[in-house]
Every structure is written in structure tokens, then in C-alpha cells.
Image (cartoon, rainbow, N blue to C red; front, side, top):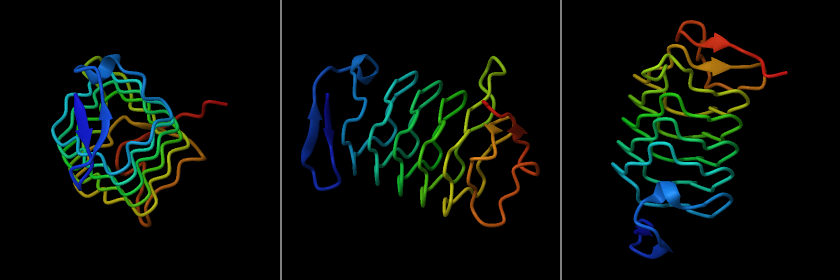
Length: 152
């Protein structure tokens, strides 16, 4: 599979099933992954700054410590994902699904940075956060149905 950036430049070429590829700590900034099936991927520390993941399926994905600053995750499915310490600063999470997965497991947002993110219409019901999680201005995690769960 080829992953191109918004300028059409190939930034990754390899295995067809991205779930089988180790892209930990890889720079995929500005990647065009709109509508991609990334269910269950494990990409820890991956740089996805400015990536287009609109409508992508990231169900049960592990993106621990990844950078999704300014990424487009509109209508993306992030249910049950491990998003601990992910940087979502300025990301578009409009209408994204960050609630519980089909088995009742929580999306984990402990230590995540959501400052400046567009969360309009996003579903956070049942997602977990802790005292390190940073939210957009006027965002109330309790009103959104989130659950405080410290990992300490």
C-alpha cells in the first residue's frame, strides 16, 4: 500500500494491510488516509500531524503517544482506542465516535491533549480521562458523559 501526503508525494510504501506494519515513531505527517480501515492498528508515537483521517475506522487502535495535531478525524471511529497521551491540539474531531466499543470497553484519553480541538457532535460517552487530560475551552467532560479514571 502507498500512503501519499496532500501533495501526492508517497510517504510510505509497503504491506497492503497497514495493521501488519510497524509504523511506531514513523513520520506520516500530512498523510491522506481518508476512509481507511485501520481497525486495531498499533502505531505508538507515530507522527500524524495534519493527516486526513476523515471517516477512518480506528476502532480498537493503539495510538499511544502519537501526534495527531491538526489532523482531520471528522466522522472517524475511535471507539475502544488507546489514545493515552495523544496530542489532538487543533484536530478536527467533529462527529467522531470516541465512546464505548461494542463490548463496553472505554476509549482511553488519559493524558491526551485536546486543546483547540473541534469536538462538535463528537461522542465521548464512557471515554476515560484523568487529571492530565487537557480539554478545549468550555469543554465539560462530565457533561459529555466521560469517566474519570486515573492510571496512577
